[in-house]
Image (cartoon, rainbow, N blue to C red):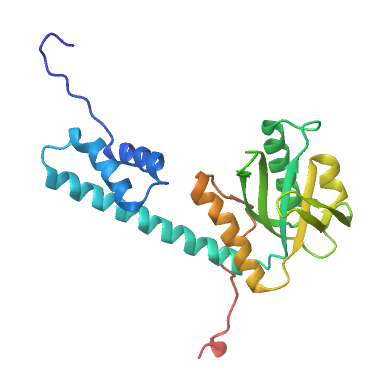
Amino acid sequence: ENGGKVKYVTVDLKKIFDDLYDKNKEKKKAELKREIITALRPYFENERKLREFVDIQLERKKRNYIVRMTRLYRKVYNNDFNYFCTFTYDDKKHSEESFMKSLKNCLKHLSNRKGWKYIGVFERSPEKKRLHFHGIFHIPENAMIGELFEKKDYSLKNHKMQKTIQNTHFNEKFGRCDFDEITHVEVLKSSIKYILKYIKKSGEKLLISKNTKTYKVYDILDDDIL
């Protein structure tokens, strides 16, 4: 293309690797590695250097994931989460874009003004691909907005009648919500696993309030140290 002249272009191999990883992350480990090696082969002068590079980058991804999960679980167990909530929008009230923007803004204000804490993710339902938000929340005593009420309706998923706890404010503002109280640590564990399942599947980023601290900080007297 350049009249026989060789034109050299500088490329960021780590970025190329990350793009390939994201593109193939739903595949099994061996197939994922094979796809990345095949795509990167033209950038390396020999097979040994190529495989060394891919192994190092895969180890980096694994290490980063472990660090993120460790930090996440510290946040989970340090903040007394007491509700697992789901928010779904009504087409008459919002589009996907306005739902995401409005809910993020609402949760940000609740965090700043009412002390709410949350960790959640936007995701799509498997069948209808409808966008909704799942999250675990710490709602301080007397900081709930709207009114919680019990509603009995038919579950299309379980094909039976069910009782749900909903909130008047969020129903009016967005369309539909469910507030499930977290009464035991095992419920908290299953809730966070449920959220992480969607992160792995869709690659969505977690939405975490700024006041959700990773550590608790205390002043300790010398006499209290054994």
